[in-house]
Length: 156
Image 1 (cartoon, helix red, strand yellow):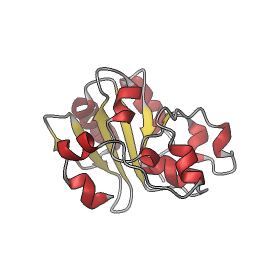
Image 2 (cartoon, helix red, strand yellow):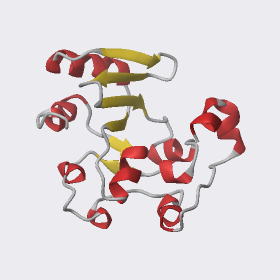
Image 3 (cartoon, one colour):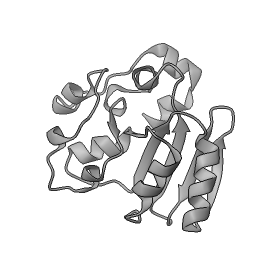
């Protein structure tokens, strides 16, 4: 689990932070994932470095062009931080691979409290990923997303 002060430190760096992707999917199933993906308005690499120094943890750049970095809190617990699409969170979600990864929730402490029902969280679902989760359906967000990053096909 992440240190309790992680949320406070993140809030000191960015005024708007969303949890996206697989963490939310796992949370919907009633599980907490050790892999947390965050999107921030700007300065993802710079902010990741600041966080890594505060927690004395290793970090590295995943994609300099797209402003994405990772902190390794342990061998099992990682946090990936990426710059949000300049067009906003809805555009960021629409550019993801599959609908069940196109969910977002502001980074709030309640996300990590498994006794709080998922439907009580302030999640965003502009791509209708929740109905796909409920129906056990995997739906691609668009061929252009896979053409932009062909490795997505392997991950899916």
